[in-house]
Length: 512
Image 1: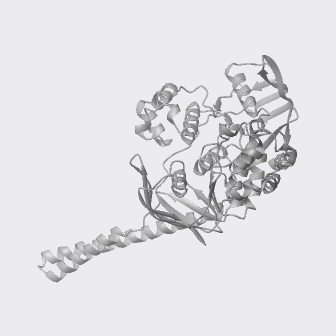
Image 2 (image 1 turned 135 degrees about the vertical axis):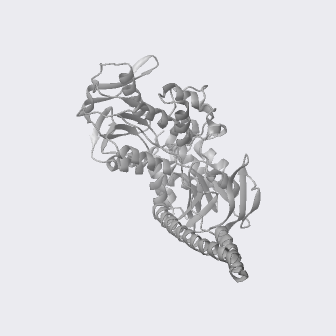
């Protein structure tokens, strides 16, 4: 049964065309992914579908009495002082407001125990707040669920739970996400938004991506054949036109004129190829012949809290070889970001204490997800100009290649989107030509194309990498060593599945 139809939707933002005559339907059995590069219009389309905005042209129609549910991305300050049960009841449908036992059952399904229902929302950890947001959405008894990057701020345990829960939902949904594992696990239909158009495939992401690639290759071959035919007919038409003039032959001239008209029609109807994503995500590196990049022995990673130094975890002995790609695994707050920051601090300040030793040939690049150390007042051009040895033209070319058009070069870093900030960080790092990389959640705001480009960059060089990420596909594709922070120690495990299983087991019961 069709729940929604979009007919000939056209929409622009600040005179920039985003959606070009889009038509699609959503059904009551759909578990649909909406995929596309950052800035292509995914969130805008979701707002139009949810009736939060009106399109410039076209019509969006929902089946009568269809109830839409939207999973909030953040907990509203207005519900922080409510109890868990009160917060869910506030968003519940009329039927469930009158049937508290069903709300309790919903909370139980999401892992909340009965004796936790009186806990204040403000006391919940980040993972349990995410579960509460899901409960609030489902309490409204929606007929269709809309999810815009629902896993962006989830820890691994909550993400795994969310994936299992969403996959088993009986109601249809449309989800925007850059998490390839989630999309392959939870969706059966994929909509690619590209060049203002929708490309619709009845498959989960990976299979749909392959179908899109095959479609593009077929279109390229078709266009090549069409252009070849146009060239052939053009040559014949020119020859006939010449003969018509030379021999004053009207028959030749009329045939030539007819062929030229045919050529014009062929050019109008020629197969269009997908636009090429010209954004480049590259990392220039420097050589190191050292066997080991970094070694640790009896190392303590500490933080200051209430003017007291507190130990987060220790490393007994560890050697990281040149070319190792090391992922840091552990609960949110266990010290992954602190560890990367401490490594950067030791390198830049030439510290030799705490058992951390960098090889003398080391050249470090540090990706800080908070853009620490990057000016918030200087323009993008001046930020890159300051650390670049190339000409002004070279600086502009590098910014353009990274996805910053010339009109954006005057912007400051605070004016950038999350994806743009990530690309700026990688561009700045590349200018340093490192042979060791520290990457703190580099995939948080990068689209799928960016993640895959970064994967290829890291795999194509001998650079040593320490990174943290919640992107399971990125971890599986990039990492060859897995360091787990648990119970005050950092130690090596064989694969990330050991960590995922432990995280999910520990999160099965409610803990404030």
